Image 1 (cartoon, protein in one colour):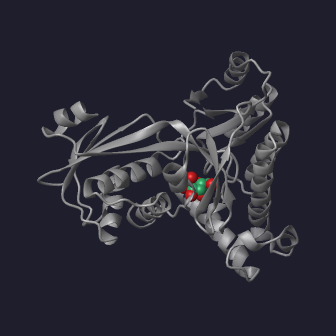
Image 2 (image 1 turned 120 degrees about the vertical axis):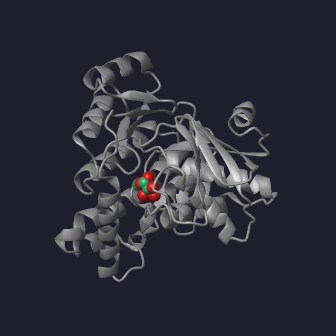
Length: 349
Ligand code: GLA
């Protein structure tokens, strides 16, 4: 990274930031309802190197060096995910001098494993290191989320940024999105999760995402609640048909996350797997964010012997995650899954 930086900008890097991708094991489309999620970091990650420079400039593999301005309007390209976090740091009173920024990442983009959150978090970490200012993980995550909401114009919740900033390798993170706090839950060695891309890029994601978010907010307001986190299953049945199924997903998904944490702590692999599969059904039927390719992939993962399988992240394409039972031959499992889904590929766990 250091020599690549020297080659790109002709000066030495002075600070670095690092942030991983995540897989969400269970608890999707609950974060913006103040609910619960259970993400876990993946091995793939984004690294950012930085040094003061005469003007703001960014460079990433596959992209030519490009000027940008965190104090000006968004450019509508990948540099917004560098500029937005720097703009938020400046708003928080941290000095942001013009910098050269080099980005290196092995996170697949548009796969639903949080490549944008990882870039935002890595930029903030590098800039904090440069400024010599420490900041708690949860504050880094909130700053990254604000950058994505305000500068990049994506109305996401806190799941991805918290997972990337506060996650620890080999541990799941129980996120309480109301308090913005996380509790690490260790994952027994017998729990082998495998993340697979269905081969179909996420599409139409932002519009449909915002529409789901509005339905969930409307359901809470009809019930007189500040968020659906406070609703119980009986409340759901009183809702008008237009928002009932969306609310049912959120309410039952929150219950599944808490049950999944109990299953993890009790090393009950089959219970965890069952909850994952129920979660997929709920996302597909009540929340309607799955696609035929994701359904086919999750079905094939189960047919080949997984204890549970579900889409992960926002849906509309991207990845699914499976939990393999201890006795399964992984190569044979993958052989069967990929034969039924020739476009699918394994994401580095
Ligand atoms: C995207 C958003 C997150 C979350 C998930 C669905 O990844 O960025 O905030 O809402 O979708 O769980």
